[in-house]
Image (cartoon, rainbow, N blue to C red):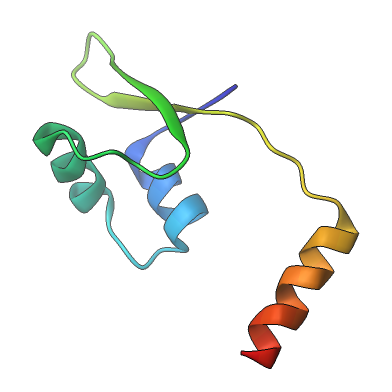
Length: 71
């Protein structure tokens, strides 16, 4: 399991198309976040998003790229 900050989550999962502020607003509103197992608040008030660490094989990555290109 890996722990990410809101900005790391925005960059990793959404490719930077959303901001960390948007992620924090989603957490506050109770929205279910893609791939997040649970969220913890640090004593300083920051959020830590815990995700399962999944590793894709190069074959699966290539297959996804080919499907995206064909669509």
